[in-house]
Length: 538
Ligand SMILES: [Zn+2]
Ligand SMILES: [Zn+2]
Image 1 (cartoon, rainbow, N blue to C red):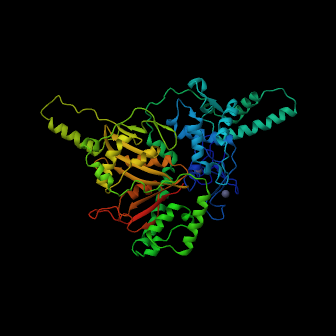
Image 2 (cartoon, rainbow, N blue to C red):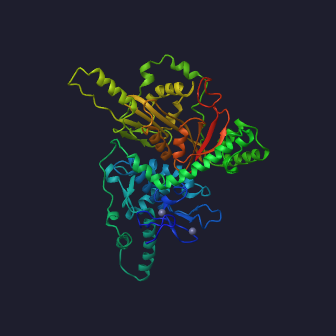
Image 3 (cartoon, rainbow, N blue to C red):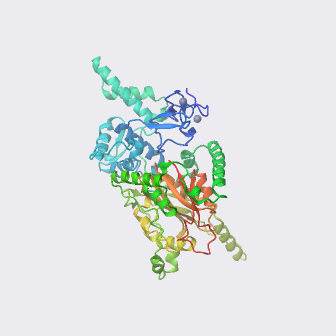
């Protein structure tokens, strides 16, 4: 059995296969990687040529994507969806187009690298691969749904790496048995290889039809979060390092307040590679010639790329104030309340059906509810039979049209006038709205695709009285999960304590943008108009 080069603990076959360094041949757990996850963060994805920190010339881990077959890609996607987004599935099955092909489309560069262009008929290849390998690896849901579109993994617990190994062995055996003129069926060879390669009986358990269709799923945040984030000891180590780094960064940034220094891009010219960063810079200060050239060059490159529609990161910031006049006639009730739907929500952005609930939390007991309970107890002191009415759960949902007036109202009150979140209905996958009964207590929005490699976190908010109980933390966690393979960028006022939450999730301050909020904030607001520009690298 192999040991992990970084933590020295065992690497268990099938459970946590590690990446093998191409130089020293040692293995490293995915969770032990310095960057916390493989590029793209797909579960079970170890299909990289990896060089460990010690062996790499640059002293940082390097990953080069291996060439993946369509079988590997589809197994990877199903394995990832199955373990990370089981809630999307219908009775455990995923739709070949809406789930599988959409996922591949969104993560194309992660799976195939940007050098591999999509062929016109690639979605047909997805369907073809699924049915071709249904003898061995895929299970069709046709008999369950009376519709030929739903698929899942036959052995959902066997990792993509092991499936690849078994498949390669199968091909070799087939050639051999043909040469030896043995009369043995492929499926017999396959079953033999399956038993030989998978020692754990538990893994060989085939797919079991799940009856839980469209019941609200209640994922446990704790276990999930640990899954995608580094282990706790790793976090401690990282935050220590991070804190130190950030401190020195901030030290060098803040006291000098030298404009030129501040706005120089911290990392490298790479961060200029997109339109959005370029625009940010444009707003803040005249560019040096070299930088301008870079931007123009990159813009041309971007234009040549396929025309994926990019979104405006500030699309919700709309300061026209039209929205305010529109809000005037709206009743108090509508301004406060939003409804909860019980049926699936079709996302216009991804074509995926979203569940009505992201999570339901019955444990959470925010301060506001504690105070309300106390008031009720005090006012009913004289009634010995009085018992408190049952407390409702907190529901995490995707944004719906009926939420918008209340959310706009809260934004106008707590951020600045003129904000309009209507646009977010175009991509509800990247939203999270938290309700207590019909009261909106928090929300968070991500604008996907602001460049080919970035999403933008536009707003995250929890009502006062409902803070410090993990609501924002879960919303942020949810949004990070929805934007796999893309960097997330955001602005945060330099004296806003939310920065600590972002840093916990691995966001790093890249620069300070002076007067970023100048055109938005009213003058009496306490928060600084200067913003940190932060990035979560994926
Ligand atoms: Zn390890
Ligand atoms: Zn090495």
